[in-house]
Image 1 (spheres, one colour):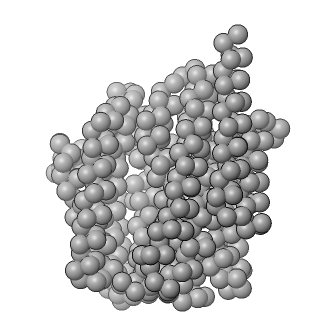
Image 2 (cartoon, rainbow, N blue to C red; image 1 turned 90 degrees about the horizontal axis):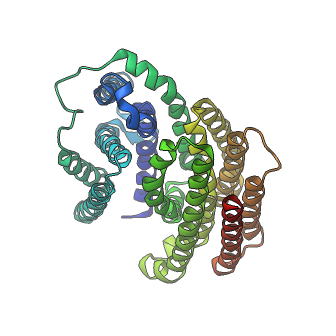
Image 3 (cartoon, rainbow, N blue to C red; image 1 turned 180 degrees about the vertical axis):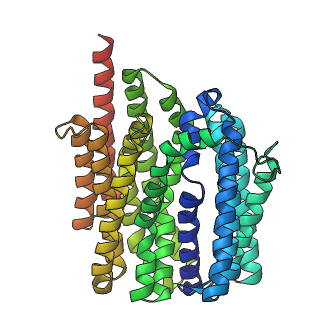
Length: 423
């Protein structure tokens, strides 16, 4: 595919990532937090699945109304088949996410990883086959949709397509009271990572959107290594009622995700320097500059996730939504100002600064306003390394030395704290 096709895929993926936060009403997080005590709620599972089904039907109705009222064009993208396929993809992918989260809470990790792996292999194979065969960006949507439907059908007794629409309004009210801030949090987080593509499309060219999209996809891929740790530990964190044990789990989670993140950063750097130049022609040469920078922004994510889990356990979801909303507004505002002047580089720098700022605010709120705290200090050191590497344009192999030194110090502090607790 040409560069402009990657730009089109980038815009569609942005919509694909944003829609679930609206259509699933934050209930995927309610499953993680409350499914372990589901017997305290009437018709817990059916209520979640019926609510999701209704929300997608409403979105489909809105899509049809928009088509017949305003035509088929939406920000340069066709409502049919593009947005329609995205809506179907979101429904089935999100439905799988609900079932995956139930597996996580039930600690059925073997089944979870088998189905996850099967989905990734199916999606990659089908997308690659269809894109190469038809040489169209629609191959991504159709391939992803087929893979999602196959995995969806593998779940036994699935309730989303069931004609049994029985649920509990009382249960929905209780769950939605907890989950609604995650709608705004999810939208804000998605805007933080994707709004720059739409702004870029307005001020620059589709080719530049394509270059940025490809570099963002590769650079942000390090975030996927956090999923394995999160799958295992997030439900355990929510189940732990004793504060000191829960904090110990959160610290262990941070160290494991930092280790896997730094290792992945190193791998992504190697790929960008030694592999990608042999795969892409000169048209894509600019992506090699941005990939390690985007990857470095995700190195602060372990602290963000730690604070997020702490706030979720304490049911302080309103703060999550508020901080995310403010961060996304600042991000969009800065992108509108600086992208027309500095182009792609501005989007990369703003992404890094936005992630650091949002994570810092999350940490402070989750620690109930403590400013002078060991966790804050550790995070600021990591943020300084990320920003320093950006300012001084350090090659990834120099930056990795600083990150490795940092993780050694963090592990030493953690072991020291554990020894103090034992005495």
